[in-house]
Amino acid sequence: MTRLRWPRWSTLLVGLLAAVWMYPVAWTLTNAVRSTADIYRAPWDVTWPPAIGNIGEAWSRGQLGTALMNSTLVTAMTVALVLVLSVTAAYALTRLRPPGRAVLFMLVLAPLIIPTEVLIVPLFSMYRTLGLINSLPGLALVNAVANVSFATVILAASFRTIPQDLIDAARVDGAGRIGILLRIVVPLARPGVVAVAVLVAVFTWNDFGGALVLIQDPDAFTVQLALTRFATFYATDQGLTFAGLAIVILPPLLLFVALQRSFIRGLTAGVVRR
Amino acid sequence: MASLRRSRRDGAIDLVFLAPTLALLVGLLAYPVASGIALSLHSARGFELTDYVGLDNYARAILGDAVFHRSLVNTVVFTAAAVTLQIGIGLVLATLVAGVRRGGTLLLLAFSTPFVLATVAVGAVWKFLYAPYFGLAPTIGSALGLDLSTVAPLADTETALWAILAAFVWRFAGFTMVVYLAGIQGLSRDYYDYAVVEGGGWWQGLRHITWPLLWPQTFALVMLGTIGALRVFDMMWIMTAGGPSHATETVATYVYSTAFRFLDVGYAQAMAMLLLLVILLLTAIEYRIMSRRAEVVSS
Image (cartoon, rainbow over all chains, first blue to last red; front, top):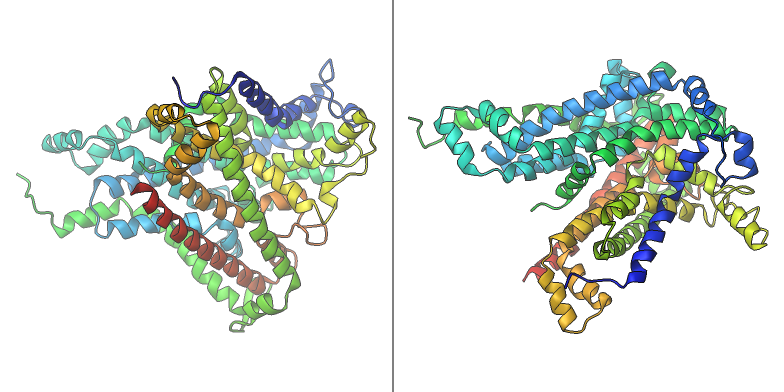
């Protein structure tokens, strides 16, 4: 006897539903290697042989090389920054006893209810004064604020599962706070750390609003901004647009499929504290 | 031998570990909130503050701006519909996927993939699906012998918001499903065995076992979904830019165009602060209602 065993037809139904669900994704990838004329003639077909040339043309005309480099830099900086911040914050909040710990936890969660969209005007104004418009590290800082709260929540949940005995034993052996953090807590919480890294990487790669406001120089465009260039300049060139979309969605897609366990563990740990 | 009593110095050292995060939050959250409040109380030329105008910007938004009213209604309606659908669809999908004999992982991947796609990509693809002449409806129509070639949901003020909602829910229902599925897999089988013994079908199982036992998940997902939908900007900006005639205008898109297209930044920030107020108010109400229910469930 297992939980809520469904009749066989329901397996078929959910399989069909999954196929429908995935259809827009599969369709984006197949249209990426079709000529624009083909797409307009028969939007839902598959063409053989594939028009591989689309990819190269989208790459050069959309200046995707530069954009991919910029996005990779912003993503790497954001992930590194968020990891340092959330590992130390979660450690202090779960394994140390700073004064006012409960209040501090609430403060770290504040970005969850004060989204970037609400602060975009003062942020732009501040960045303009500081000369940080078009700065990739500047964009990484804004992304770090947007991600640091849930990262800390996930890591706090992960750090809480570490037996206190291990930490006490290390302390008796003379390990200090940093020693315990680096040699015991982080290694034992590695799945949580990986989950945070993957989630932050995907969210940062996909960020649009922050980049739209804070990046204006085409040389500093992230991939998301570069995609809007297709909509503006090549609006009627659907083959090119789909090729661009495919190039940009592929890195997070591959990361997700390769690390889906970490990814899903992170999502669930971030939502419900156990 | 370390003393058992912790000194004040120990607490201060513990605090140092939080310092980098707190510094970032002061610089890029607290300061922008403070300067945002100041901005909303001034008129401005470009991004330079000029005169102090008190609450004039707020009064203008609340009393006199029909577009702001429209954007607020759109935002709240969109949020209510999005949260309801994400919860409903996510829960049903989770129970379906939990019940299959084989291929659960594959199904999980299929439903949650849209969540990792960029909004820009999702928006562009769905825009094509909704296009007249070669979109989805015209194609299906011609297969069935109907002329649906001019059906264009995004161009119609009656349907545009709902069309974007479908794309939005498609993107996020997989996330709710993942959370619910983990919850279901964490429940003891005994509950369901008991339900089967009692002669309950899947609906009874869902209603009397899954739903109440997964209340913590629902609680968190409703709060996250509410904030995620109230702030919605990118989906609208990419698919319709708020049009046609403000049918898909949300507070966030209106703030953006007021600030960066019409350069009316004091007024834009007043509306942004009102959005923040709506977010705080609605989540506080949800928190009160849902945490009261949580006590009932756990007792």
